[in-house]
Length: 305
Image 1 (cartoon, rainbow, N blue to C red):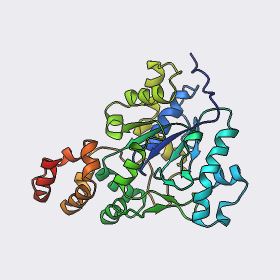
Image 2 (cartoon, rainbow, N blue to C red):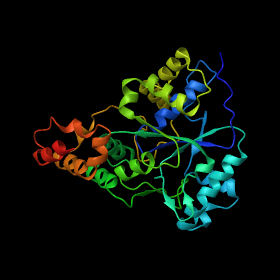
Image 3 (spheres, helix red, strand yellow):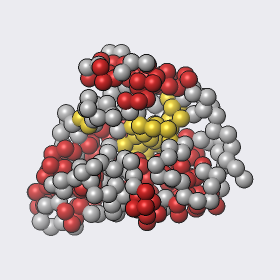
């Protein structure tokens, strides 16, 4: 049975996350779920997800203004208008990937409620996010990665990049900017829960964002198989992946939970846990540290939270 028509029009559904938290995996799950082919979805084709919110091409095409000719603050001020235009001109509901924080200025929200259907926020243990970022950025320097996740001024993208500057800030501020705002309906999906049961996580997202779509176990199961790490790695090995940075050896690298135990020093773990204690505790990540006897300076912190 084919999936029901996705037409709704005039709305964007955001797949939001801090970089390297599982956003691409969820996009592949959705693409394979809504595909009508029995073969795995082409990882370099958009599927039901239509791009990245920070894409210069999307901005330029929507507003008819070259973003590269504008100053960063001018681009930021115009981005909400670009998203409203994209939503207004679309005949169907759209998925767009977003790595920015959900920020509010005097002119309103960066991701405007009037152009939005829902937001799905993918969250991952920041200790594993740091490791994944280090390899993704091509330096494998864990100290640099920890610095990145603790930097409230962190920005990705620049005027020479296909993507506009995106303020991601530090990990916990990024998380809370999405999950604690009340302007948009938001569903939080833990990456670790995706690892434990990808089919259940996918079904939750579909029920939340597309309640009119019938959940078919066979279709869910096919999407999970075609989106497995092994399947994605094989596709990347065969045809490459256009989202892989040149400096990274591969995009779909390992994807496991707990990799931080093999890469981060006690001092780095301690710094991350101290900086992000509240958000880590809230989403169950601080509890992962209770067995680390060499982190004695965190004993009181963990006990309090």
